[in-house]
Image (cartoon, rainbow, N blue to C red; front, side):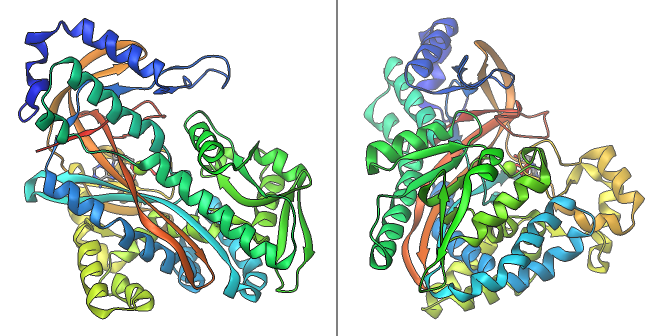
Length: 489
Ligand code: ADP
Ligand code: MG
């Protein structure tokens, strides 16, 4: 437990059991809770899976990751705007991946309609860029960038609160407390939606004065309910919780306005933002024809889509791999930059986080594929899926690569990042266990744009997830990891 300061004395000062109980009580009393995977949403909540003590994190690395938040927002915004690029990059994937094909289909069928009101288009993004320290080179490398269903902003902020509480209980000093950084993730995400609603109202008012518009949330489990509460408490914005099936039955497009745009109504209510906290895995589309048609209808409206299909596609792992090829990031920053020097600094910073990534079916990947067949433990093979549990490692990776063939076009081969291992106590379902662990840092950023005008663009807090060193996947909801917070060293 090097560098943990007062937490190092944990076992001398307190019985672990006492502290574990205190942590669980604090968590449940402060809403650091989740619905167990198999329970019905309203029926039972349990403390979220958490690390008892914060993870030591190099301060300069943490600061550097946070300083790149806005650059990643601008990069992904440029990528999402370049629909031809998305089609070109993802069409080969879509041949072997129906989920990507569905998204591309929506993008292409709605393109002409969207082009008519580009100048006033409503765009919002919540991103989370995930990183791991790569110990052999002491660098911070990006695991992936998420553009849909970006989660744990609230529970992550609360985990920092828990660690601050435990620090106090253990008699930590002010200097110790200063090493636990504040985390504005929840308010950051909520305020971006609030800003989008206000922008929507301002634009609509000049076209037609009406009642305040609502926000529609595609519901999943617990974490996003904090966003709903925050929207009401901080912005007086109402939310309607709907499933994709309900959306299919209740969503409609209003008459075309003078500027060619069409408002979205759900159950007769005007909607400013559609916030997808479901819809990033194929299983969310219970009736694919019906549910994809609902998404397409939303896509044709002037509501802010959080995210649009273009943004969802921009977050594909294939796009991330393509962005790592020389020249790509540079071209996208050139497209957005107003200041050449700032653009140069931004692309150097962004590029510094890229791990080795290859398209395993392409000739340029020949060497990497040969190396991965020989040393599969040094690589990860990723399909185009979100939410954890889909990546291939070790023998499965080797077998898939050895199969070869065109279907490999739907995969990305990635350098395996090797983070430092630290000892930690993990709490899950009321039980504590000590284990060798490794951690992943996520940095949130938000952007709101109306046509060419950026209404809001900023970093918005962070998230640390910790998992046992022997598990390949890291998803908290999927049961692999726990929520954590950094203590800066
Ligand atoms: P998902 O969309 O399923 O979250 P990720 O790319 O984030 O996909 O991969 C899931 C998990 O797998 C990550 O949280 C991380 O723990 C692990 N992982 C992914 N890529 C790498 C990598 N290049 N090196 C080491 N671990 C990785
Ligand atoms: Mg991930």
